[in-house]
Amino acid sequence: MTMLRISTRAMIALGVFLFIGCGPATTSIKPGPMPEGATFHGVWHSTQYGRMELCESSGTVIGEYTKDARHGRIRGRVGGDLLRFQWEEEKMVVRGRPNVSSGRGFFKLIRTDEGSDRLDGEWGYGDDEVGGGPWTAVLLRSARPDNCYASVRRADGTKASSDPFG
Image (tube, rainbow, N blue to C red; front, side, top):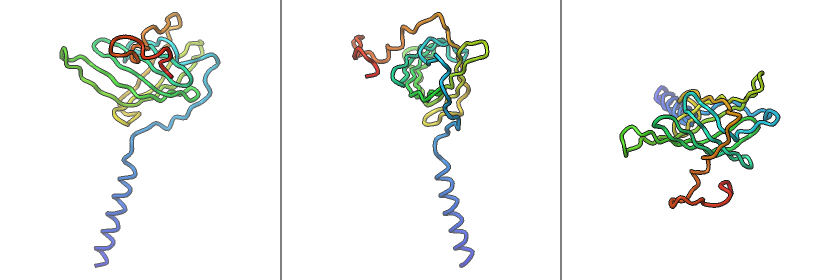
């Protein structure tokens, strides 16, 4: 009888431990100060995900990225030099039948010794912010975003409002 009670208690304790430990995978990275004059707003090139156009307003970033058959959208919040975001991507594997996936991720904006800006981050599926792989990009200083508001247009092609962040 005593062994049964101990085993039952052990199983309950193990279950509680596993339940508490099964939340989304997140990073322990903390925001630091934003480098002087830096912003997430701009056109970035990612070897993994192609051209990324990001627009930042009042601490919110929205944007799009495109590479080959892949097209995705990003929306997130900035804290210091850290952007935590949600992403959604369509990959056209079979014509007319896109493969849609989504998740979370983060970018840390880093100013290099040469004075250029880069994003170092990671992405994950679903509620996980990590575990999918690295996501890096470099700022294309001479380019300006011209397509990052497309995700806030109405179905008829007109803008939903003059301020897509409002």
